[in-house]
Picture (tube, rainbow, N blue to C red):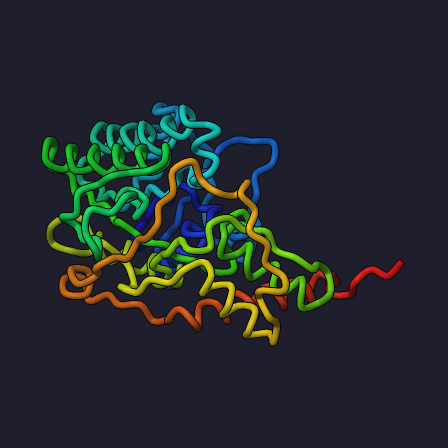
Length: 328
């Protein structure tokens, strides 16, 4: 039975990856930070099938101990401070987790077992102010947020350790990938959750920032499959994972509201407070290398993605009994 360590197992991608690896017959070890409010909601359904260990990207000794104690063949480094707006409010902390945390992980692997296969979660936010359209593995980076800058560091330090120490270290440059497990602070889930609440009479408006921002949105479970495929190759490399299509926040709103028979323009309010200090106007990836080398392609299109998320939010509100509007 192969064994994998997932940092960030309680996040959207970590939980989907854990599901995927368990189906593949893996033994899964998940690293979580010791906090007073660890949120296991996303892995509650598999919590008895995974081993949870405490560690911290800020503490290399804890990472070394985990690798020594559990001997994973594969390590998926998904943990990070991953909410872009927060990276302006906490830029130093973002750098510690999202940039230097990668170095600590890689150096722990180098120290304990150089045969471990390592996956680093890179991000389309590294492209920022895009230098070419679409973006591919060779496109120059121009990050537009502390988060994007930190991810660029993590990406290059992964390449550096691969070339310097002959580690099997890959980076997946993942474009936006969404689903019902996405945090409510992210615009896609914010939209679909608000649509469900407005449809059920629990809310009347949705406040958003730049409606013209365009993103390449995919289905999160598809993207964790690409992560795994990268570590099954004969040689380590970096891959863009994307749908190759771009849609605006406005289009996302239109599709979500129309799906439940509502007019989005009657409910969406543009609020300047949600604008970023430096906007990323458009991201769209070229996944041809992943398709050619990994045999990967997305299984869910944009419209299906929006509908899946709206359906999930409506079901969740019904399940929790929050579908009856308060009167009086």
